Structures are given as structure tokens and as C-alpha cells.
Length: 449
Image (cartoon, helix red, strand yellow):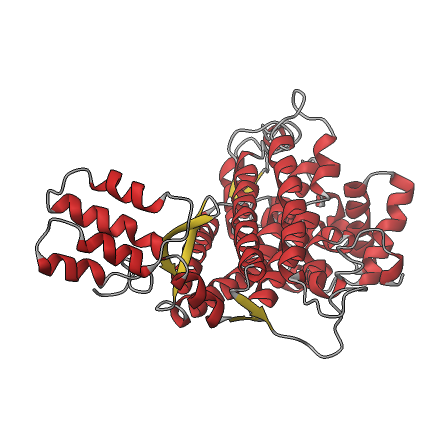
């Protein structure tokens, strides 16, 4: 099917951006992960039950190859079997048994899926796919964004800029420091994300190893399951029903949601600075900004990122709210939801890439930034009243308020005239006159004073 025929823009319009996630979240990927889990389970089972003790190393290698050499045609075969079974995990089981028969391993095939329920496979395969997708695609993309923000913050750390609180002129900051804010915020969440465990459920039909224990009562099945799951880099939920309770997975989605929220904040600020003419955008030959207005260069990357982040947040919120809730020991409402995890992750990846692209196209419009600082001498009022307080001058805040809230622009001359009229030592007047919007930028994080 051509991408023009896909329903979702995730693998239609944005196919190029999201293609790295196919091997983790496509239907074929899900089947491959399920086959891998069934095989890993059986090979680990061979270490502890007598009926599989005579399984040779060559046979084990053959069995492992069913998972490691899994092909597109294998996935198609599983789907053909599913048409008959109307059960996706049973189709995986029958597919593996077919492979066993074809490879002369038929005597061992009834140990495939022994004692398991579907969710022992799903609740290990899906977390493993999420883990590998985040580690191999999302986290590296976020690290690239953090590095880019670090570069911009260092590049423009000493470039003063008028701040705006409530949209109004406020105490000056620097361009680089404002990028530093977002670098730190994303970095903090990224560090939390890297520490989060990936949960797995493995315990039989209702979480109690019933079938395992009744068949082999002398085996420590919880210890076996812990060892199996830990090998995959997952953490087994110890007390469950038929399914994982998903609480830790919900926490993971909440962390991803917070990162998307921070990126929306960044994208909107960049959009605003472009609209204020603080940033210019690099023009690419052949691109069109408007179908009607030839002059326009729209901040489309930041707008695209914001829209996709919003979709990711909405879906992550649904995942984290829905998955931990199930009727009694299990209902099927989590199954279809789990199949959609790749969708918000894809929208998140589009967001990251669009933000990186947008940041790579901006440059400073120094003249506009300088002009805004010069036109807003009033912002040094905070500095003057603070120093006057330290000198014991009466009612400094009120005095500056009367000066600065007259409904007209306050010039440098107005400020100096006010200072000249103050009853303070001459050296302090000189000190106050030296304060400008260009040097009243405070302490830059990480920079020695």
C-alpha cells in the first residue's frame, strides 16, 4: 500500500520521520516480539524441567533461530493461522509448533506455551518493544534536542533580551538563558525516564502459577519468572491478576507526556519570538509560506511540533488512565489499547524532529532585540527601587510607581532626571545611572560572577 492510501498521517504523510519505529510497533513487530518471548520462555524452561534436559545445543540453536531469523513471510503465516483460530497468541503458538515439526523437533512442541496465558506473552513482549523503542529511537532523539538547546544557550548566553511576564516588558534576561531553561527541563525528565523500570507480568492464567505449580510443585516458579524477565531488562510485577496492573507503565507514559508538554512550551515561545521579530528563519529556495501572500515565512516546524505533541499527550493520558483499570481478574479492553502505543510515540518523535528542525532554522534579529531594550528603559525601575531600599530611602517602590505608571513611554533621560532628584550620595546616583536594560540581566546559571 502506498503511503498516500494510509489512514493515519503517522505512517502516511510522516512515514519518513516515523519509519524507525516500525520495527517496534507495527503488527509484524508485535508478532515478532511475541514469537521471541515464546522461544525465550521455552529455552529457559529447558534448564529446569527433566522433559527438556536432553534438548541438544544444536536443537536450542535451531529453536532460537525461529525468533532471530523471523521474516515478513513468517508474520504473514501467523496472520493466516489467526484467521482460523481467531486468537492472535494461539496463532503464534501454532506457528512455532509448525516450525518445530518442520525442523524435526516435534517431540518438544507441546512445551511451547506450557502453563501460560496470552498475557504472559503480551505483557512481556509489549514492554520489551517499548523499552527498545525508547532506548534506540526516542531517547537518542531527545538527547539530540538537549544538545541543540545547550549549543544555543551557550551561543547566546551573553545576548541581553527584554523579558515579558504576562506579555508585558519585564526585567531583562538573555536569549541563551531562556534556552537553558528548556534544556534543563527536558534533561531532568530524560534522566527520570532512563531510571524508570519497564514492568512485565509473568504468572499464568490468574497470576498464581497455577498450572506450573500443579505440574512441577518442587520448582520455584516465581524465581524462574524473575530470572527470565530480568534477562530482558524488565521488572516482573510480583502480585497480579491475569494481566499486569500497568501502574509502572502508566508512570512511564506520564513522563513521556511531561516531555511533550515541555516541548509545547518551547515551541510556543519560539513561535512568539519569531512573531516578535526577535528570530529570523532561514529561507529555503522553492518553499512557499502562503498560497496567497508571497512574503510569508511561516514558523511551520514549531506549529507542526505543537500539534503533534498535543496528540501524543492526549493518547498518553488515555493510556495511563485506562490501562491500570480492569474488571476483576481481566477484561479485554486493554488489548486494543496496547496495540496503539506506537501512535503517541510516533507523534512524539515527529514533535522532537520538527522542533530540532525549527531550532536549526532560526537566527537572531539583533536590531529588533536591541531596539526593544532601548525602548523599555522602564524595566530598570525594579533595580533602582531595590537599591534605594538598601539605602533606607523612604517609599522607593511607590516613588518608582508614580514615575513609571503615567501612561507614557519612559526615556533614559526621564530615569536620570528622577535619579538626580533623589536625596542620596552622588556615588550612588552614578551607580544607578549606570544600570541599563543591557546590563541588568542578573546571574546566568553556571557562569562565574
